[in-house]
Length: 356
Image 1 (cartoon, rainbow, N blue to C red):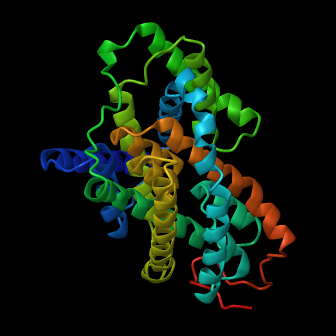
Image 2 (image 1 turned 135 degrees about the vertical axis):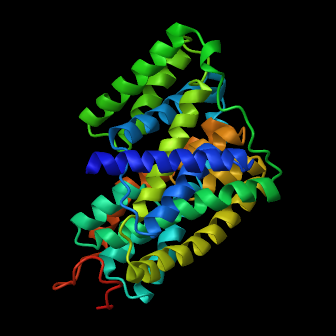
């Protein structure tokens, strides 16, 4: 039955992609499957994620980023230091705004803490659940954050920054040397498994990125993954966002998802402020500044940077800095500040908990 649900999800995603493509809508390989799966999930359809295939899709993005790290990009890292130095302040301000926000809505201290942290969805859910928070609430709040940012960011890029969103994501498969394709495939698999073995966070993206960057800097590869591979990555990432909402109840829709939507508005305001700071001070170009501080997921921001023709090295360096700060700092700061789950909490999915 699980396999049947998976095939049904795949067929639905393909239909969504085809409809978006025929309608001439932007990013059909991302928004088509995402929209189709989101609507079906909220309608109660028994969808199923793609499992290992989705993980492989993320490794493609890691390779794309790594291939963009050339000697020229490395030489420019000191020039990026000014805007990267603002990322810790950005994270702290999000926490100062977000934790009281979720506490006021009635969430317990641990859930409020990890709901406010702008880290990776999986990492924040795991950390928060292990600390005694509400895993279901955290999953839906962070999924909503990613969904809204991914949906609105292209519109903002097009309307306010004049981005065409038609940037070449890569050369066609037929135009790339076979040896480079083999090296990139090897970097994806070896980098992913090697990073997992040493316990590196974000192993599916960071492992392939590091290994491909080494190949790029060594002059062994000179191009990004083929366009077909990047489109496939967008497709499976779109499915992954949509199926997060499978089994959502009306109570969860009203509480967790509305909480996530409201929090995104606060995040958007902070992101806009920091984008203006780095742009007006000359630390970044407008499109790169916006994408660097947009609090979306690392994989999703990579996709948007690719299609917007942005400086991948600049954008990803800022997101990596944010994720490192949150993943390493959030659990430590929670312990230092005595953030603990109150005893006798209700089951996950019961809605925001009363303040203690």
